Length: 173
Image (cartoon, rainbow, N blue to C red):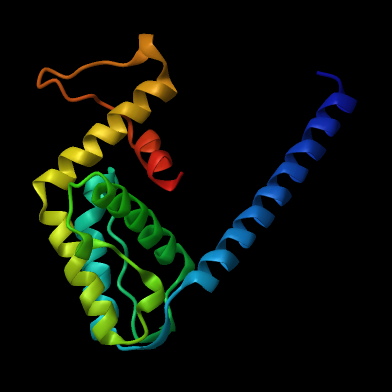
């Protein structure tokens, strides 16, 4: 590689990183705007974080989300997780796997009672064997589509295996 080509490549990398940062900033602004707004105590936010941490393993995410204290809005990265959960839960409700009252609607949360109600619904969903099977089936289907027919493997139990990145990406879509 010539010095000019290396310089061009370095410039393209810098441009790509700048654009990626801009996209991430825009996403954070979008999630901050979608965040529930109200007076939330540490007790309410902790209940919601604990419920989210019960759902994370179902999405292939082993790392727990850190608790945060009293707030008037939720952190954008946490709202991103809640949005992912909301979409998956809505899909399960549409498929008849979960009852209508399991739906996660962040727009109606304005106080601790709303946070705790949301946490209760999320805890119920986390315990649902039907939801776990539904997620696994959806992830398996998407993983097979993304990886192509030849790369998909079946486990001995007949459930498809998909890596964590594919799993998370599929839920963020």
